[in-house]
Amino acid sequence: MKLILSTSNIMKGDGSSVIRHPTTDKSNVELINSLRSNFVAAQQAVSDSSTAAFHTSEGAETGRPCPSWISEQDGAHYIPAIDFSQPGLVEERDQYDITVKLFYLPGIPVSRRCAHTRQAIDLVLKELHVDSIDLLIVSFPGVSFDADDDGEEEISDSGSEQQPGDIDNIIQTWKTLESLQEKGMIAQLGVAEFSGERLAKFLPHTKVRPSVDQINVRDCCVVPKSLILYAKQENIQLLTHNDCTNILPVGTTRELLGPGENGAGMLASAPDADDGIKGHLEPQWVVKYTAVIKDRGVVENKGYFALADIGNCVEQRP
Image (cartoon, rainbow, N blue to C red):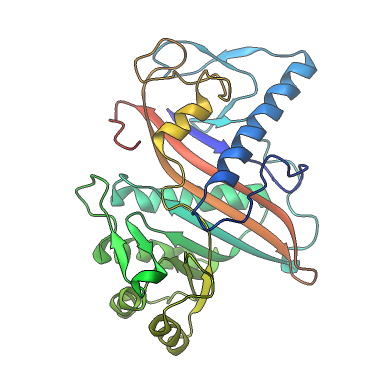
């Protein structure tokens, strides 16, 4: 069973539940709080409408009904239900800069990335009612950046035999991104957490070179000089961020969807528990999108989508 989680446009709310206070720690607070807030809003809307019907979810091992605030489209369950016929951006497309960041999650085979990339981009295009995005930044699992290490990255394979952080697998994935860029869906491509050394290994194998390298540093002013010089030489813009690499762990996802006080009440609290839909949970990817009005620098639309599978896979991540 495929589950597509969405935050909707988090700029429409009062922001009180999704504010991320300044911190030097990598964070997924905005994603988690925004998902939870959207679940609660959808449940409340169904309750207020007095039409809180239930439908049976295909593939649910327990046969438990799913609430009507969850919909099924194209073989996937949308949590909460989403109506892509609603208006997207207010102004004409050329008035916006649309940036998307795609997180490939730890433990997921590299072979799935082609389909995952297209799924994530298609959802953003449908949500915003556009045909293309201006910049796609990709975050690879097992690759991290630490300014104190003078640009060296740590590669940690999370149990996958395919070594998702290896340069060969990154190059393989990049070919998929290049094909989407050639089709006009993406104007520019970017990477996250690449040091000068990793860029030097990667660039000779690309047809479409990254225009951005987004890195996480403890102090935004402390960027290794070697990386600054190399990025300038290769015409790559350096940006900073505060995102987690493993932005949606299994435990966090099950808590979001489970029967607890802060859960959506859909998924069982454990794979074999009887308090919801049974099955092993496997988050696949997360995508973040931001639409900024160019001439005013105003963020009009910002949100997240995430894909998770429920099946017979083994939950390996905490």
